[in-house]
Length: 480
Image (cartoon, rainbow, N blue to C red; front, side, top):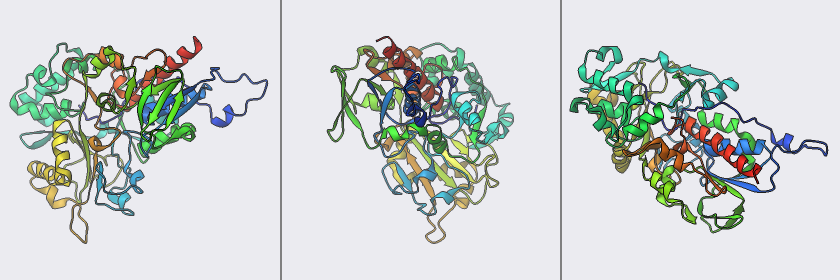
């Protein structure tokens, strides 16, 4: 089972057409006019994958929209290193001692700080990639490595180990599992196999195997409909591709506009931003991460329904850290190790010398507290597996001899505060339905945490939720 990161599967067809703005503005008297005749405005909070896609669908139907983005960058948890060259190299969330103009030289291909793999060639994101004729790499060609007893071997080399086969057997049977237990409890794996279980399931799905609920995870996995292909973009940054696909809505985005309160008891709805500015909208789509909803960053009046808040309590979103390290020698081979360690250069570079390291859950919180000292901790872990080669071959500054590294600490991103959603022990797929419910045909909720098709925690889930919520908004308008 390969690793999957923050944000990336998808699962519905491209049902929403795209009409360029110039076509919308060129209607003559005898033109049919917009598909949906509506004089109101729909405000969309968040310009990540879900917000951009929902905006694109509604705009294409002639509905007036405005997108309110809290931060200074589009894409949400889809974030590419190449686009950070103009951002200060030291901040709570983005720590980099590879300074501009040398920033892009950390690797000879796009380095992702968030989502990095596309799951499903026939998923929404997979179809977008195909339609834009963007070259991809099929990661099936890579040979995964798995670590037990501080030893990295391939799947076939571990096949005779009882603990290894127990972990793989549990993972294979997960879609049919039922029972309100954590993954750790449900698996019943020996202490020796726990680290492998945690990396393949706990870390993979956003936390630790002691935190992730097996029941909610199983229900989601049973619903996935797209194929199992794993793809990486060969030369294009994911963030650039996302913004290119939804470029028609970028003029409608207001950046640096964090919404702090929504009063949907009024008509129209009153929205207040962090600076105290008041805005109005007739309908509002909220696409912020589940951590923001749970943390009270946005206050709602009236309060959110009890059904929704109860379900929010069953969905977790933990700390997440991405570390990029470049080496002078590839000492690990062509596969993805861990799966917390991803050999990002497979099929994209002749050198294969870059490791993309992703840690989620309690371990990520520990590393986050260390700050830049986490680099030493990660190198020590690699040294234990590869006989000291990590520290020997890690790339350093020629003048200062300091290790070159990049850290993206998602838990310290002010408007994200974590990695991606996962089910807690008592969660079911109904909790995701409840989080995505609409309120009085005025408030609508999208984002990966609201996906009910087995793709929560991914780009797929975000885009699928955008299709769902856009359909709900249109239905609420047309029945007026």
